[in-house]
Image (cartoon, rainbow, N blue to C red; front, side, top):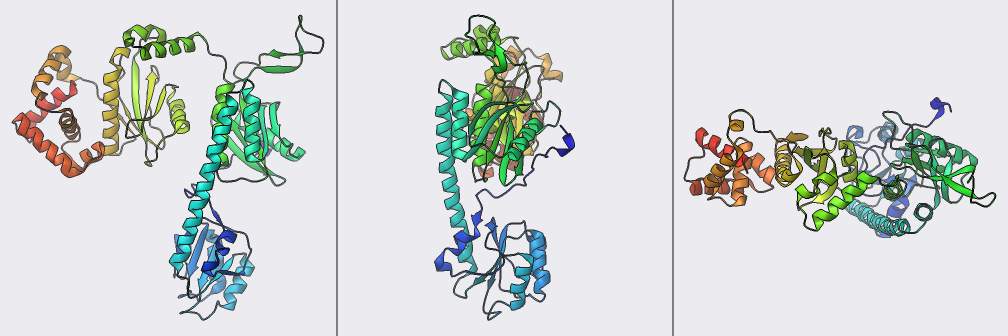
Length: 517
């Protein structure tokens, strides 16, 4: 296979949080009175922007319906050429009070450069058009969510069938109205569902599958392409599969010509390949759900270690102590607890949480933990946490299994510190120096006595405030409260402890005590 001829994975720039709106849908809103007078009829609107600049190019992202009354329009041809260069989807021109009608030169320029031109009547404010676009986007988003939900339910039901892999592929092909294929790295079809693509599309699909299944650093997890008007995509799976090898026969005990299951080489990578007539909003999400299910369904059978881990989980749920189940989990440790949260503020779902765990080298992931929607990952040495793009992490120091509850609390504190200081990864600092010279039991007894007047919320606020060098704002961010709440709590701590928190000796002693919790 000529690698130079293979398609490269498509890299799509971040788009809007809602599906695009077809220009025809906006024109169909009769109450707006819009009329297309130049340019093509098809366009997808991603945003609405209003500008009266002579050249709005620097302020456009692409995909906009640009609204203008032509206040500074002097050179229509250059104006339209710059809009097309910026990637604008369409131009809406408002008539009156600046222009009594749309300039003919602007109409000709839009036809020449292929930019849809809409005439906006005087009685239609630009804000009304913007509201109409946002409403259409919301309706499209609602339809997309309903479609994804239905597909998710159908795929989950298919995964529970006796023949789960073909059933999942069948449901996927039906919901995407196309072809779904499970392929090996060499392009062999293991399972298929849906209509057959053209030979050109099938060959391109096999090349895409080979691209994502390459056992090479930097190989993409997914890739897209088009062939003869067919939309193609391929996704690498995390599992393997045991399927019949063509031509293999059981040496004995089988009727003549009967196929038997022969194990494939360990480590052979698989890909899910899709061929559809078009790409609809939500298709990538539906495909992602199928990828997770198929990765689980094609994974090798669990060995003794996996069974032991399941047994340990059952015993913990039934009340066994961590020390009793530790032998079933393998080495006693040390274990590292990591708390993580998305930097963009969005809630992590099972897919993104699982991807984070894979990046950190662990399958022990708890998604959506707590009211703050943090993700917890449990790492076993020699894995050590590293910063992850799109995430803020807090990690406790490695600890033996019985001490994991305390490490869990410390990882949460480290995550709060990372968010307050805007660092991608904050790691709990182990006790060193003079603090390490004091026996832990004596240090803990001293801490309980000193901090006895404080309630848990006050103690946590004081600990966080001291860790951030007395910063009201950063403490408020870390605790997700108002800075005035922090001031009130710290003042209450000073009253209950009967001490001056501005005294460095006092702060040092309190910090030592709080570190023993």
